[in-house]
Image (cartoon, rainbow, N blue to C red; front, side):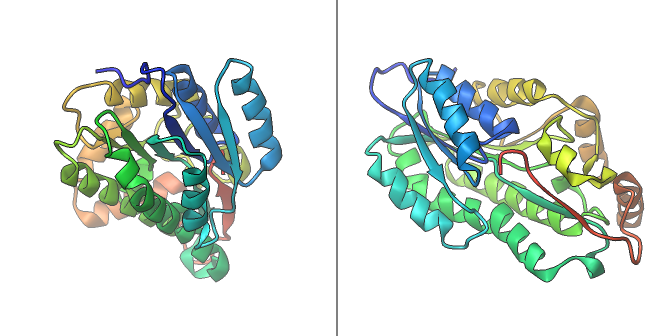
Length: 279
């Protein structure tokens, strides 16, 4: 059943990482389906530009700039979202941060930021908004994970581990929420043509076949609109085959192949960093 707001009553879609890339496109798609949108990211100017675009089409928009690497950001955002007085029906956790290079060379503070942005903030924001999402049937929770969540990846060790956490968390929530009417999805794209990969300056994140933003949206919403859909969808046939294969391959093999895929993971390789498009 298609998820959309046709009630004529305000319903809010909250999107983190909404300043560009997948996050911005999620905002457009939910607005097109009749939802008010709350846009969350660091870059106020980008959010304002998107807000003007959406408002021109009649969407009510709330701009909520936030640094999601702040461990307290989820609590502040939940309070600001409550202040809108619009019932939350959709949450898309799309913001993300990635580092690449040998783990021994990564900056400890940057690792902490990566874990907060990719794990702590979406976990807490989901927990704080879950009562609203489940208050009536027809809500949706989308956590944007990654194809990198399916196996350990030397060279992007922390990034892959944070995404594995997010996929695991989402799958557990999916099981807990069965029968409530809440759609729960761990969306696992491979490399996507967004600013994340432009900013990375490294091939390390290019794990799997490259998709467009439109490709990812089509897969995500087709899955959300399907009755009795599972908790996880990986974007791209090649990526889905790879994700299945690593479940059965010997661990030494998957680690060796993972290191080749990321073109990293060797002793002494220098780190690079990128923030997921929309962060």
